[in-house]
Image 1 (cartoon, rainbow, N blue to C red):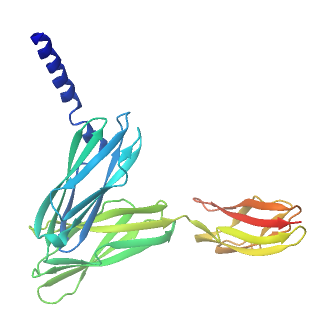
Image 2 (image 1 turned 30 degrees about the vertical axis):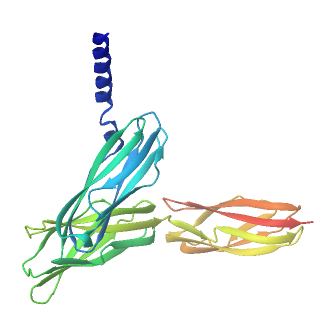
Image 3 (image 1 turned 45 degrees about the vertical axis):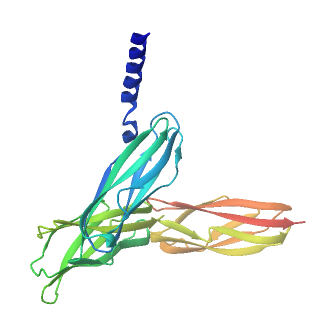
Length: 325
């Protein structure tokens, strides 16, 4: 009986050992170093979590080793194959110099495990980035846009920026030295977006290398928002109440960053007509929509505008009405 008990205990220990550390594989990265940042900035990073276990996964708790960091998960339960994010925010106004903070993520299912993530920043008062975050927003795909900020070093007139590089290949950064006062070295940073940047809202970083040994690399966060090359206004056309045989007219505007031609209009019929008055290539087209319903009931059509643009060449809008006898 005693021997059987030892064998059973050994089996439990082997099983536990095989399961230990399973949750690390759910993360595609375990750390984030924000580098040297101006004192007072709030740095944000998102860790991606994907359930690859084949079983339901639950996050039972999140705690941090310093009050300067908060961490929250978008959801606490993951079905097999499901993804979520854990967002860490580091308030550099709470400390000076280098601070490394551990984020403990506890999992309760399919069995207990704890993952340790860490974030780090060097909070400094001898330089500043204005604005704290560059933003390129609401630009049409295919168009050009840029954002500009200033990097200033205090008490170090010999400070130089030796290299600037975008974390994303779609961002093209450049640098120009700005004349400053005694003891101040200042540089203008410009981040330009490539024309082929995909549609979406996303976040990236511009990394700046310096000749200052105590802060060899600086991080400048950048937000980007690229809209589809085509947009239609309004996206939903409500014509209200109309009687059978009556006619109602509405204007619809289609815009793009580059000149284009309307090559086709789909979704029209004997009741609904949509016409474009010009066949020229231009950035803005005004379409005339006419509805003359032949039967009562709810009218609900989707109209598609097709253009000669190379990318994102189609856009839709919906037409609704309540038709009375």
